[in-house]
Length: 149
Image (cartoon, rainbow, N blue to C red; front, side):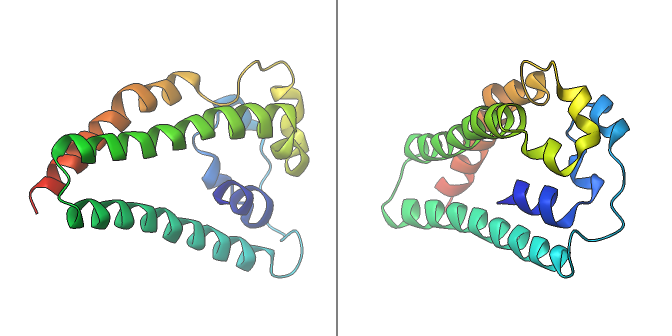
C-alpha cells in the first residue's frame, strides 16, 4: 500500500531515494496531481499503511508480554515478521511488480529504458544487508527491550 500511495498517488521523487542513482537521475518531477485529490488519497493510504505496520508491532509486543514470552520467543516473532516483510519486498514488489509487471514504469515511463535489462529490482546488496544483518539485529534489540517489561 505504501508503494501504491507513493508511486501512483503522491508522486514525489523524495520517496524514491532507495532507487538506484540511474533511475533517480531520469525521474521527472510531477508538479501536477494525477487527478484532483490524488495526493490526498495517497497520503491517506500512506498513513494508513504506517498505522497498520505500527499495529503489527504493538500487537506482537502486547501479545508477547501478556503471554510471558522469553527473549527467544520475542526474537523469533520479530525475526519472522521482518523476514517475511523483506522477502515479500524483494520477491513480490521488486521482482514481480517493478520488473515483470512494470508498475513503476507505467507511472514513470522515463524509467522504462533504464530498467529494461535489469535482472533484479532495486539494490540487492542493500536488501540482503537488511535481511541478513540489520533485521536480525533489530529483532534482537526489540526482543531484549520487550523482556525488560
